[in-house]
Amino acid sequence: MSKIFVDACFDKPTPYTPVWMMRQAGRYLPEYMKVRAKAGNFLNLCHNPTLAAEVTLQPVDIVGVDAAILFSDILVIPNEMGMNLDFIKGEGPVFEKPIATSEDIDSLLGGEAAADRLTYVYETIKIVREQLSSDKALIGFTGAPWTLATYMIEGQGTKTYNICKKMMYSNPELLHKILAKVTEVVKYYLEKQIASGVDVVQIFDSWAAAIEPSKYDEFSWKYMVEISDFIKAKYPHIPIIMFPKGVPAFLDKVYGNFDVFGVDWATPMALAKEKLGDKYVLQGNMEPCRLYSQEATKACVESLADTMKEGRHIFNLGHGILPDVPVENAKYFVKLCQEVSKR
Picture 1: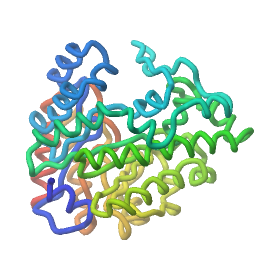
Picture 2 (picture 1 turned 30 degrees about the horizontal axis):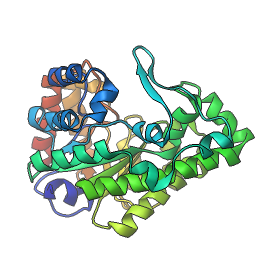
Picture 3 (picture 1 turned 60 degrees about the vertical axis):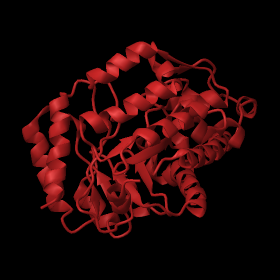
Picture 4 (picture 1 turned 135 degrees about the vertical axis):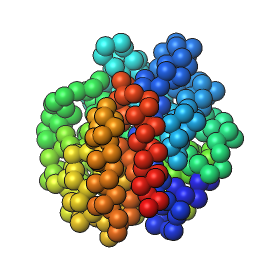
């Protein structure tokens, strides 16, 4: 286990502040594209433990990050609950039959039975753990129940969230039923990731900003906290990272038993430090598009280091790395963060 990364999550003394990048494996790496071509399509790659392990390790070997993040996809959860998932070129992930009724959610597998079907994820973790250097951490992850539910209800990605938000206001009981069932699967999914060898787990709420602040706790955050409480009760030594994207208005209301709060690029780090820095380690929050320019990258890294010089911080992007980012710029970011944090 990476002492540097895990200790940083728990605010213990470390030689330097560790760095990693969200969505580390991806189209910006030519090596990844070769493996994906070998797999045939994205879902096949997720389902192939040997290939998924290979692309999990690529950013560690090529870019030099201090932690590997498991290669998978958040939507393998509803897929194994019984929803037929396809990745369509030009459209992204699509579910054949979205959830619209109580009977639809009743027909899906739940709890540990659904989590048990994700064997390819656990096998990937075991392979990575065998090959990953002992000074590097392995981060497991899941989508938050709200983010997963949006895909399950809308049937695909959306810019308006009108179907699931219509349910939120006109049939909140059904939405809570969906969220509760997904939450139970996620609990066991993360537990099985830990049993397979991950050192840290992260809960991504990518579509948190779709919910108005007054409704966020009810329909998203409380379910994330329920998951965190479940994991902490059994595995107090495992750091938990919460990452709700786009919720600066919610910072005053953040609560829960977790270790790291991921700060997205639209939330000022100084604001996050003021509101949360005394309770949690902060992670983030460089705008991913700064990676197109080494000069812009350096300015942000220096600013983050200055803002957090008396705080607790893990260098990271404020969302996923983009596919056309030059690899050399990604390497530059990692090396610069490591150099700055040793000062």
